[in-house]
Length: 227
Image 1: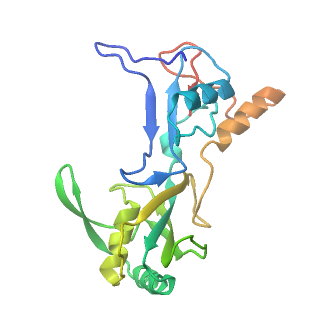
Image 2: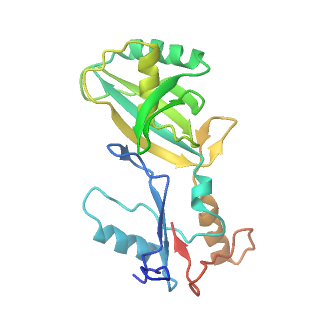
Image 3: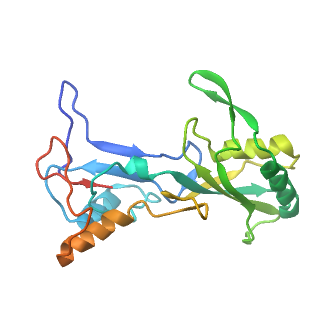
């Protein structure tokens, strides 16, 4: 695949990861942009990447990038937090106590040392899920987090829940990102970040004019990015 490289003394591939999940978390919604020196069919790029990756890392879709930054579209994430050994009714009471607070301070060790910050303001939605699990007692928390600075992670939210309520968490929480993208503020839900690129490609194919019909990559002639 003709991946574009940066210029200078130490060229590196033009691959940009946007909104990467924290270490130890599973994810079904990770995105990246790859700049190419030659135009390629999106399905062929997807197949080539998927073949090169190990089992368990699956490329679900590739689209030709339009104008604008992909990272700017990733405004919020939806997470699933599984708590083995926790009764859902207990979790519901803890969630209620969390949502009643306007501010909840938690601490996390960062590269600059121990940092204290508010984890409550980033939580747009928090509820106990009704889905069944194939194990014994297990509560499922459904969380929508607004992206910002400092970045509040799902384990920070769990720390905040444990700060306001005692829950018998007997094992490690299982964190899974389900979606990330533009925030629909009215509903507190996460939209598809590739929708406008997909629509622009379809408009180009059908000959219809659209606001995102062109694409470019600086420094590379005829080199679209592939999120």
